[in-house]
Length: 129
Image (cartoon, rainbow, N blue to C red; front, top):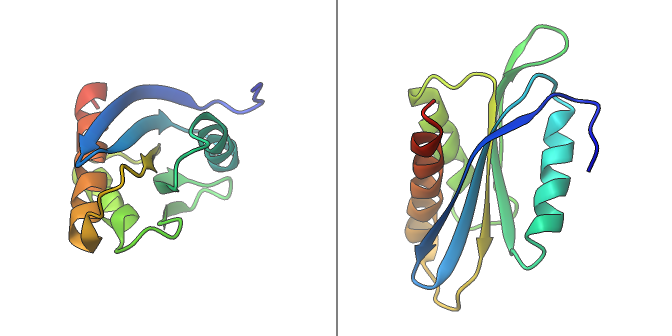
C-alpha cells in the first residue's frame, strides 16, 4: 500500500495466550492520517482477526497533543491499557495495533486485557523505544 504519509513500523511481535494469537505492531507516525492507513493495513493483513485494538499518542496537524484508543468491540478495555503502557514508556509519536485471532478458548475480560497489554509491552520492548 503506497502512502503519502511518513509512518514507520519499528517492531512487530506475535504473542500466544490459550491458543489465541496476538499480533502487535508499533509505528512511529508524523501525521494523524497515518492512523487510517495503519488500520486498513491491519484489517487486510489479519483478515481473520476478530479485533484490532489501537492506541495512539501523537501531535496532530494543529499542534495539539492527542491520545486515542479504540477497543474495536473487544471485551474489557484492552486498548486503554495499551495506551497506559505507551504513556509509561514516554512514547509520544507512536501507534500500537494489536490484532487478535481467536483460538477457541475464552479468556474473559481480564485475560483479554492482560494479553493485549503483554503484546503491547513486548512490541515496545522489541523496538528498543
